[in-house]
Length: 595
Image (cartoon, rainbow, N blue to C red; front, side):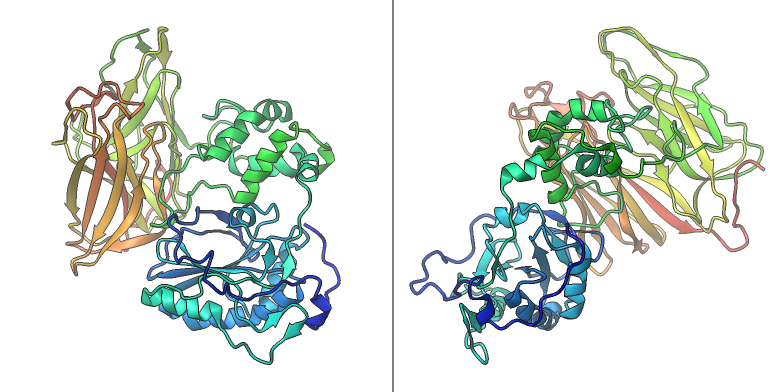
């Protein structure tokens, strides 16, 4: 990105004749058959106004999407920008969503934000300085616009209108291509002129080899890895390598490029069309391209003086910060070298002498090599042993899970005299081993006004036939009291294919809260809703799970076997874990731990 520089004045169209192309529609309609068969590939980019925006991010009532390519100092783009702002306001209430894209590497974030303010543009303008999305869509000039239908298929691309062309300008447009395309798309009609040529300035590009030569670890890769990956990829955490060390990161550069480009990292499996989640793990197209270029150009370290501020963590060992209480298994668990190990249950006494409100929970296996997952169940006074009941799951750890970290004023209540029951699932790996799992708790420092409770929804009657690639099961749970729904977690085993949460209101309204179209047993995600969803007594959660018990499932232990509910990974489960918030009655607010 460049620094702020002098602005060009409101140039005449003749002054940009060398920069602009024509915008006449194809006379015979060639190249414009209507909607493309395949949807535009999803993308994530930084917004000039801050934050990240995603093409597929669902907005209630969206029927069409406009992608407008623009640039800070392109004269035609400057003339058309206020018009785009007005058109967006005109169609906002009719289900049209607008996204701008600035592909010029010379346009800084501050300049783009100022450009949007000057043009009274309210929709986000996204930054694409490495031209990933620009190249994907084949854009060469800034002022080209795209209209996508509800399925994100292109129904129009080209000019906003016909007012400007090479060296000339009409007093008013005689053809309003963008408006015509929007009207047709919103009405479900084919767009008559589905392609025109957009006038404007060529995208500011540099040669590919020059891009590659200028990418280094300290200046380009480290900020991305430290911001998005170091939470796990650092000493003492679950990532198998550390990205805080320049030499180790460089050694892993080809692998980093591969998993980033394929979408395997960062791990995230929610369909972006449904729901918004505060713990979403995604890289922007620019970040992904930067890491790929860094690896391809030799993973150069660069100058350490270019390094960003080193990331800081609340505690070197615990992601939640220094714990107030650490609970460990009473002794080491012995895991054999081979065989199937039944689930083990070990009771742990926290020795609390007063009620505690817990804000953060983190579980850590002592030996990750043989520990598949651990669950901690709260046993209130009077409940002991294996007497588990719904709502008592307190915390857990498994592939891809993160610690529970609640907002201030929210907590999990632990009555004095309670115990915890650790549920331990071990998977032998050919070598006898030991494990001593621990759980760390941090108490609330402020009065707790909302109690957070776990709720489990399960279908234990699943019966997956052999060689069935789409065995589908559902279950429904009715809310008994009003509450706020805050997070969702699907759980299946190796034959799990997809999982969906839907909310059915008493009114009959139905909406998808979370859809995981490609479930991966190796990553047990909790999806934390960006905004809690209020539910009323009588509202329902409907869960739908699909299993692939065919030979085409590479993780399938045996496609010829009928599979029913069971704890082992070669058996199956259908479970939805949810977190609910309920207000603490006035006068019973509390803070802190054992007091």
